[in-house]
Image (cartoon, rainbow, N blue to C red; front, side, top):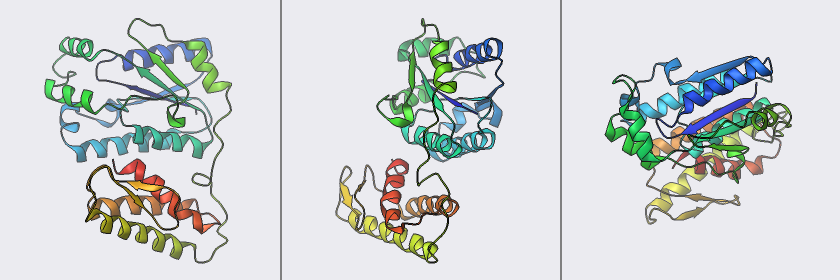
Length: 275
C-alpha cells in the first residue's frame, strides 16, 4: 500500500488535497484509497498541540495506525500536519520495512493566509491563535534532498495537483530497497542481545558524561561509531532510556549479523529522536 504523507501548516488545504487525490486515484485508476487523519484517532488539536507529551502520544497513535494499514496494495494517505522531519523519517522507515513506495505532498501557504482561513472555520475545527503561531514556528519544511522527503510535491493554494506525476511516483517507481535497519536478518550471533544491551547502554553513559560539560549544539563522539550524537538540547536520562528501549525493541525484531554496526545505528536513531 503506497503511502502518501501530507504535510503543511494548519489550514493549508491538506484535507482538500487529500480528497482530490483520493477521488482521482479511485475514479481514474480504480485504486482503493484509505485515509488516516487526526479525526480517526479523536484528536482535539487545541489540547493535543498545547503539550509536548500529548502531541507525542498523538503522533505515536497515527504512526501505529499507518503501520497497521501499510502493505503493498492500495493507497494509504496520512492527512495530518507531519511537520517534524524526524517523524517523517520514521514514516519513511515504515515504507522501507514494507518495501512499498511513498511520496510527500507539501501544501505550502503563507502563514498570514493560513491564519485567515483558520478564522473562517467553525470554532470546533479552528486552532487558537496561540497554538497556530506555535505550530508555524515549529514547522520543519520538507527538503527533497532528504530521502525521507523524496519524492516531494510542493503545492500552493492556486496550484492544481500533478495527479499523473504523483501516481507515477507511487505505482511506476520501485520501492526503496530495504537495509539492515529494516530487514530481518538471521540471528547468527548468540550474544547479539547481550551486545545490543551493552553497546546502547555505553552510548547512553557517554552522552550523560558529555552533557556535564557540553552546551547545546555540541557533537559527542561515540566509541566505535562513525557518526556523532548532536546535542541540540539537554536530554534527560529518562528520555535517553525511553529512546533506547524503543531502539532495542525494534532491533530485536530486525537483528543483524554484524554487531559492530549497532553503535552507529543507535547514534543515527538518537539524532532523529532527541530533537
